[in-house]
Length: 163
Length: 264
Image 1 (cartoon, rainbow over the protein chains, first blue to last red):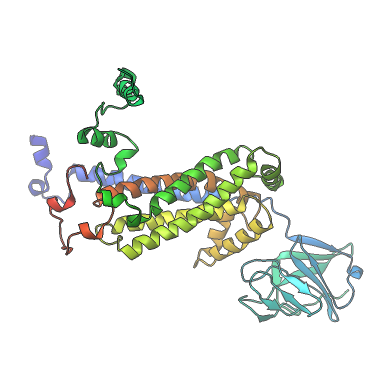
Image 2: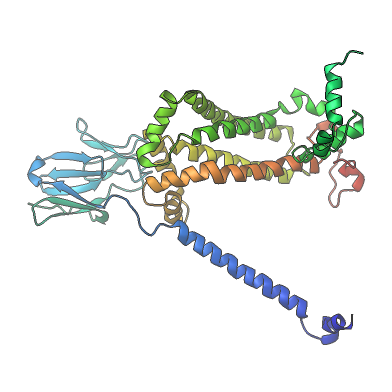
């Protein structure tokens, strides 16, 4: 057909003809659509609202915790420690793979049942595969005088709360 | 003349209804047998002719077939389990208990599902080792080896996602540990962890995601790749046999004669 002949690159001297243009246009639109679908899928699969327990935990009255005691709250995964220097809260979730650790009062250490990591009472690692110490958590006294812990905020260690 | 059972079957195969379903027709000639395989949507994945030696136990130990058998068993036992199991936090554990103690044959179905799952993981590895040590992964079958590796990963993911569903302590901590391993992925580890669980901790979203993956997405993907895996056996020249292979593997295009006969 004469029309097609006119469109061949050799005769028109152009880099691509009409068919190549439409092929590129089609592939380009499909690529954009695919990228958009990927982005929308990612957004769809990431929940915007979580019905998870609040990170802020009310640990009750400070006088419930004897001096030199370590108390675990298994539901929130925190230790409430009443040291000589004051109160602090420690995450009870092992920094290795997320198991719940346990306080061993007879040994005075925190031990993880999954892969054998051991920690001191202040969270420092003694041995095992855990890459980091157990983090200290933001702790304060509420207006009502209750001990409060925010599990989502880690703080530098050795920051005690005095009552 | 007394009619034998075989003659009744021949009569049945001659009826119009039978002929409308199975078009290869009656008769037991080589052509009819070949057509019976070639014209069946399931069987046409396979070769129409195989050497008797290939079907002997020692060639493959039937490991691939046994793996597929456990997969079918898992589908057949898994679907009835879905009738009693709710993938929700308050109900999942109680439903699992009910399946064991209340539902008729529930204990049998659940245990069959569980043991088949263990057997499938074992058989997949055994199949892989057998293929490896026989050298059956070598060209022209290297792509089918890759499909096999994908199927191994799907099997492990099916096993892993199914592990959470009883929603007991074992399940919860196994998935906690497993999903934390996923967050070791460089750069986007935490995002992978969040997407996988649909949250920061193993909770209702994680249970539902694992349920959908376990009962819907992964089995469908598995069936797709199993079909390609079977079809490639035929396309790659049938089951591997040391004696039937050419002495040297030449680079470049394979001559038409070496690709096998018409039925390959």
